Length: 109
Image 1 (cartoon, helix red, strand yellow):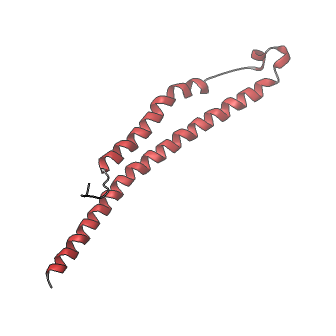
Image 2 (spheres, rainbow, N blue to C red):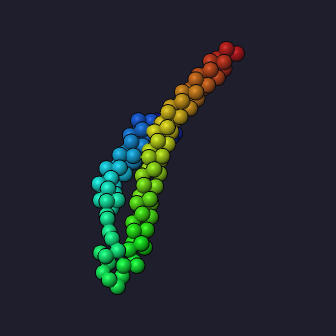
Image 3 (cartoon, rainbow, N blue to C red):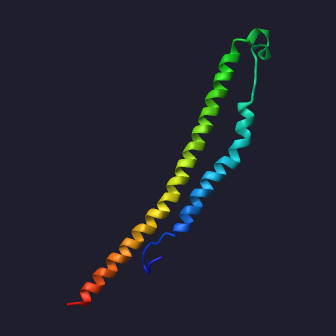
C-alpha cells in the first residue's frame, strides 16, 4: 500500500477469486446432484393429477439449469478476480518503473 494512497494486495484478489469458485461448487454440488436425480412419473401424482408431471419435471429442469448458470457465473467471476490480480501487479510495476524514470530524468537537469 502506498503512503496516503490506496493499495490492493494482489494475493488477496487471487485468494478471493479461488474462494468464490470453490465455495459455490462446494455448497451447491451435492444438492444439485440430488435435484438432478429426481425421477418422477405421471402416476406419482395420482390418477387425477398425472397431467402435472410434465410441468413438475420442466420446473426441475429449469431449476437445475439456473443453478448450473449460477456456478458458471461464480467460476467466471472468480477467474476475473484472479485475473485482476495479475493486471494490478502489472500496472503497479509499470507505474513504479515510469515514476522511477521520471524521477531520474528530473535529477539530470
